[in-house]
Length: 126
Figure 1 (spheres, rainbow, N blue to C red):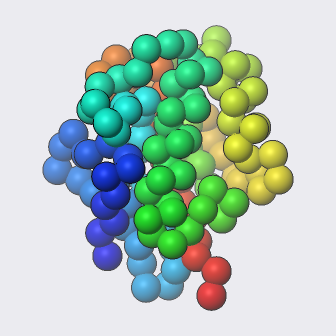
Figure 2 (tube, rainbow, N blue to C red; figure 1 turned 135 degrees about the vertical axis):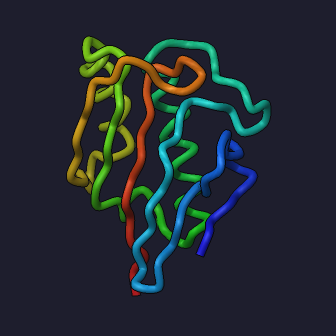
């Protein structure tokens, strides 16, 4: 089932915000720091962008019947690996208890010249 919420940015290409499977798994598309209200990348550094990305993911997961506490795997894409510590400061505010498995990958570019993109896999309790 395709997931869509106006509380997160509209996809900028031919993809869904997330897909929910019958087995209760949710796979999100990568989110960048786009404000849902404007459709534009927010101003600010890595901390501000990380917060917006996670808030976007939170909105998508909640619309699918899940939450950040049910994330089991996250993949973080950073344009600059020097931002790793600052990203972790914000990330840990949202995932201090659940601590999902995670990979962090340095990339040369992201859509809209974003500093960070995150995708997650979550579940729905049955």
